[in-house]
Image 1 (cartoon, rainbow, N blue to C red):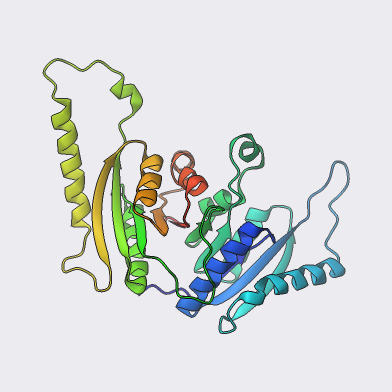
Image 2: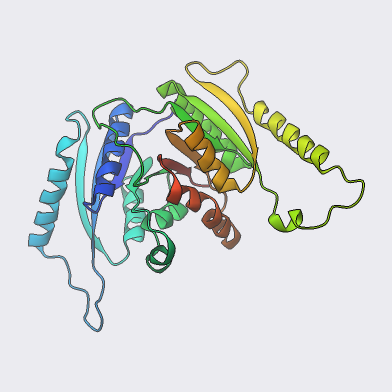
Length: 297
């Protein structure tokens, strides 16, 4: 059984973070976990001026704002309120996650795209890349979740590339699904680079046969991940699709009514971060349901 004893939820008082708080509170209540609500006061230098430290009056005001934001958290969820100051929000969130020994981070994303995201970056993406624990990102398109009702995961989409990270994601998703009596959709995407497709096909090469064999092999590997006998209280379905990885993940989640996408991240070298940016981050930006990302071991 999955053990979650401490949930950390950073907020900036926006509607996006309020929605994330609802998910965090529902999960904390479901697992009997403590919930810490965190606000980071940004303390950066402006132009040639040194940073202005947070005053005690500001700290009290922000704490009062946190208390008001948390007013709808169920009374039976142990709740801590934290106001800290830092020049770098994502680093401070990571520090606080370590300090409270968080088992789960839950944060909202503003869903920035294009030039704005390129210039400003994304706190959520930076946190996910370095988080010491699983991180659930609640996108702005996600449905509201009543914090005082059971977690409503009915269909969990779990992309699998057969790496150790994705297999651990399957195990995590399975634990969630068993407790929520949900269905897990195991998805493997065959992504053929467009430059290969653009090359002329040699005479006698049966492309359809090669593709069919690749699909059959992937299907067999996926089905090998389905426990035998089946786990109680949850079902699994294995699907193989062809196309760009992140688009197929989003398409399956939309077609099948996915309530949650669970993904594993491999190492954190330069190449891995590029892969993260091209797949995991794109899913986080465009998903219409929460995305839970597991860190590498």
